[in-house]
Length: 94
Length: 231
Image 1 (cartoon, rainbow over the protein chains, first blue to last red):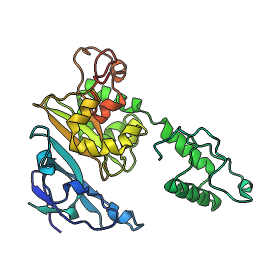
Image 2 (image 1 turned 120 degrees about the vertical axis):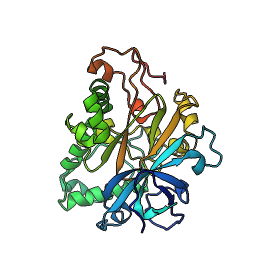
Image 3 (image 1 turned 180 degrees about the vertical axis):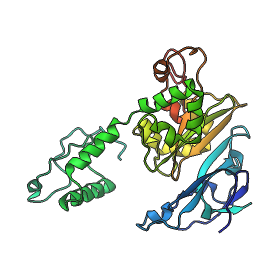
Image 4 (image 1 turned 90 degrees about the vertical axis):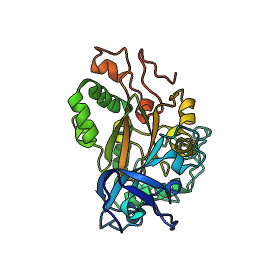
């Protein structure tokens, strides 16, 4: 586990594809973004989904990605972004 | 939910067999809006509901009241919040800092969801999606429209947001940023649109009347004389 991160930190989403209920969308796995804000700590939904208590709580971040980083063929201007809510265990320093 | 909702007008007399003795449970039958044959997940929901009622965990009346509560949540609640933010700078500040606390001033309770307000500016157009399912700020906007839950919207708005916005009649110039928010976890987003020019001196109620649901999802922008850019 790494972090905690602070706004402005560059992070890379872990590129892994475990089975089960995962809240990190495929399209940002392996991509680099910037921490936009720390959202607080929440019970881990990936555990809650299976009837566990989701503890310990996981820190949730909002990570901002440049669209051109996420989609190599993105047609819009370079400044466009997609913000994604990602739990700490999916993030590594970049 | 099936996409062919409304395509079947026949009576609900053919599907999930309750078996003998069902009428003896004593709970009033629910009258579903959708009378088409239920899919697998819908059947599971129906079975779960019946078991919970049979075991006395909940009553049919609880279910009905829950549905009525959901139905009573409408976008006018969000519109009132936006109009207040346009006219009261202190409220706007509170709304952007801690939306749950701010909307509580309207008697709105987002529950466990962390309501997060993102503000449109002359540089940024925000737009909301949930690519995994259909997370939506229900406490302020009610139930999501069908297009919000469609695979078409959910996949394309992250890949080609400007094209999708254009289909809503919303053209974003290239010198503005389009910021898509994918609400995947415990946050629910609400877009605070820009107050349109020509509304100086309007009352909160007049302003709220031009704030549509789609404006607060970010696919359109409010316009004067009740016309958003979509129309």
